[in-house]
Length: 490
Image (cartoon, rainbow, N blue to C red; front, side, top):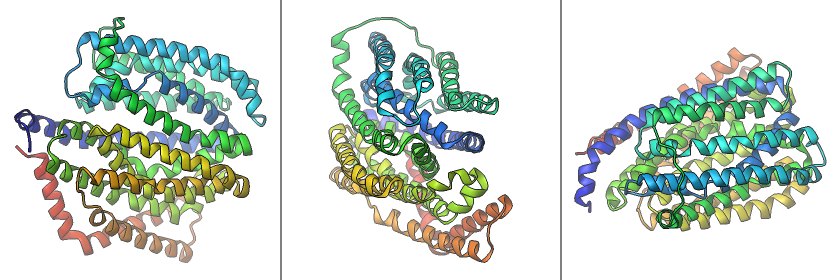
C-alpha cells in the first residue's frame, strides 16, 4: 500500500524513468561504440603483456579507490531525505582525506608488487603505478556532483559527463599507443580523463566546495554505507583472484589474455548496466509498494534477458572468427576462456537485477553475504583449478561461482514474489536456437572476412527476431503495453 507522499511522487519520478530509459540506452550505445572501436585498435597495436601490466595497476587502483569512498555515495542515493549542505561538505572532506591517504599508501606498496610479480611487472610498471595513483584524488573530487546527478535522476547530464570522460580516456590512450607507447598509454589516458572530468561535473551540477567534519552528520549515512562498502570490498577481493592467481601463477601475459576475454564477455551485460542504474533509485523511492516493485523488477528482468541472451549466444557461436578477424591471432590463446566467461554472463545477467533490487530495498546485509559466498567460491575453486587447467581453470571457477545468482533470487523472492521462469526460459531457448543456426551457417559458409562476419551476425539477429515474432508476438505486445502503463501511472 502506497503512502500519500509516494503517490504524489510517482508521476514526476516515472517521467524521469521514461526519459532515463532512452538517455541511458543512448549512453550505452555511445559507450559501447567508443569502447569497442578503441579496444579493437589497442588489441591490434598492443600485446597481451601490455594489457596484463595495466590490469595489475587497475587492480591496485580499484582497491584504494574503494577504500576512499566507504560506501557514502551509495548511501546518498539510497536515502530518501535530501542531504543538507553541511552533510555534503562532511562527506566531501572525508573522501578527499581518504584519497590522499590512498595515494600515499600506493607509493609505499609498490616494492611489494615487484617482489610478488616476478614475471612481467618491472620497475617501469611500478613508476607508472605511482603516477596513476593521483587518478584516485581526481576521481574523488567529482564524486559529490556525480552522485547528486544520479540521486536526482538527471540522467542526461550524467551521460554527458560520463561519455565525455570515457571519450577523452580512450582517445588519449589510442593516441599514445599509436605513437609507440605500451601499457603507459592506459595510464596517460586514465589520468587525463579523470582530470578533465572534474570541471565538467561541477558545471553540470554546481557544488560549493567546503571542508567540514562532523561525526553526527556521518552517522546518518555510515550504517548503510558501511554495508555497501563491505559488499564492495568482498567483490574486490573476489576480483583480486584474477591479478593475484592468474597474474601471480601464470604471468602478466596470461593475465592480459584473461582480461581481454573478460572484456569481450561482458558485452551482453550492457543492458543490465542501464536497467540496474534505472531501477536502483526507482525501487529505493517505492520501497513500500511491493506490487509496483514486482512489476518493475519483472519488466527489468524481461528486458535484460530479451536483449542479453542473443548476444551471449552470438559471441559463443562466432568466437573464433571474431577473434581472428577483429583482434588478430595473438589473442587466440584466450578463446577457450572467452567461451567460458561468456557463458558465465548468462548467470550474471539476471544477478544484476536481483542484487540491485535487494540493495535498493535496503537489504545491504543480504547482498553482502551473497557477495561473500561468491568471493569464497572464486578463491576456493580458482587456485587448484588454475594449477591443473591454467587459464581455463580460472574461467571454470568463475562459471561455477556465478551459480550464486540462485541465492540472490531466493532472497529477493522472500520480499517480492517475482515470476522468473516466464521471463527467462523462452528468451534463452530462442537465443540458443538462433545460435545453432548461426553456427551451422558458419560451417556451410566459412567466415574469412569482416563482411562475412557481419552477414553472419545479421543472420543470427534476424533468426532470433523471427522466433520472437513467431512465438511471443502477442505476449510481447501485452508486456510492452503493461510496461508503458506502469511508467505512465498517475
